[in-house]
Length: 369
Image 1 (cartoon, helix red, strand yellow):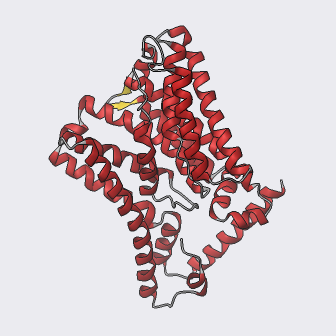
Image 2 (tube, rainbow, N blue to C red; image 1 turned 90 degrees about the horizontal axis):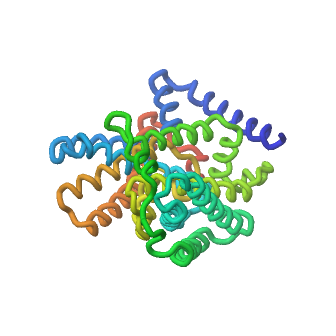
């Protein structure tokens, strides 16, 4: 209870200060200031990029947005959204997770191994797979959040261990049939019109995460910890416990994504999760999440996932080799980080010039974002 009161008071003080400052501005500028505070430029960049990409696809490769192709695109987007939601929350705490790819591969292989295409075994197989994913997150969380080990080293080591365990425990192929039951395949390929049900599930999860971060007291505490861990610890918040818990949640999200990805491809192999390690970080960064922690936008992360999936499909439709497509993702990551930093700095400078006011002392002495 004391934690909740302190966070609420701190948020109320900060909010009242912003309201008092904005109330002294002219009407139009006040509305712009409020909008900028709630949805800064780093969250809006991806929407501009997505609009441009859609226009290019409509002219160059319109079949990407039609028929069965659109259902496949939305299914792949849904899987990426689920993974990106977990990664976003980890990055908001100022940590990193390099285990999504290995976790997804393990989960998919576990579903195939324990079900072996038998419908009656599917529920048990999914339960075992998700429990394994949650256990991976718990190990990461304990080592990083409570013991205090370096997140990069721990999750890199965890990914290597998971890959070895997958081969030793489940084997290649993971079952005689090598495929998931038909019901999971049918679910992953079902849709509402041209939109895959996988994306519908992912959007429902995104709404839940957004509500948690903006409305739930625990979510507001989480955001406070990510924005300033030192200050949050002074207020009495359990910083290490929150960091440990977020790894469990993130790994569970990877598990759900792995189950749906296994259903979509039907016969997953040991390389299923490899593509998602780098792509997920690119998506979250493109959505405006800062790599050192702080606030983030769930809607912008979803838009970034749509952008990256469409971009990959566009390049594949133009017969661009896979290596060049990965290269493009790297360029997108660099441009996204650069745009976030340069765009935010430029907009702040333009607003100060428009008001003909020098930068405030707080701005001049604030640590770099």
